[in-house]
Image 1 (cartoon, rainbow, N blue to C red):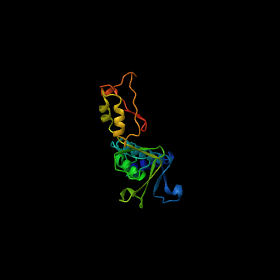
Image 2 (image 1 turned 90 degrees about the vertical axis):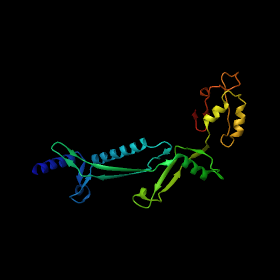
Image 3 (image 1 turned 180 degrees about the vertical axis):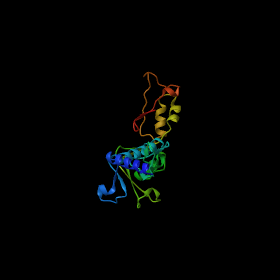
Image 4 (image 1 turned 120 degrees about the horizontal axis):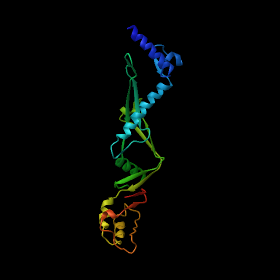
Length: 222
């Protein structure tokens, strides 16, 4: 027992010298039998939080989005343990992340931005300044059924389309087919143009893999 107490005294002294922990009473006049983290202890705790946040983003399923700061992290101290050679500081971290289904979010934004929206399939192109703010009525809002979300920033609504269906529909066809597509998909496509190389050709390649679509709204090549 004296040996363990001596080891504990040495460990506590080392942690204090290195800035990991301090008596509460030494920091702001708290209770002398309680401890608080020093600057390095706080950094250790913050590093654990960052690892939790990284793990949430890396495990996010496809078709979902987690906005910045749309999560809550709970940290709690566990009992430390020691041996003749080691002293282990244990922390428990739990992260509660709020994920949005991209399709449902796009439809929700469209209903709020477009008068007489007909529930067509759409994509929401979110601006760099688009953000969300979460709020609740308790200290643990993730446990509430009435968690409030406030959206702000720019969002552009774009109607979805099946690129593979368009490509298969024009493969081997005359370039004039583009006008038919523009009329048929006028609710989804604002304008469409085509370029065939070499320029003297009038028909699209028969091989669909040789046809590319550039979406000027999404700024993507498919």
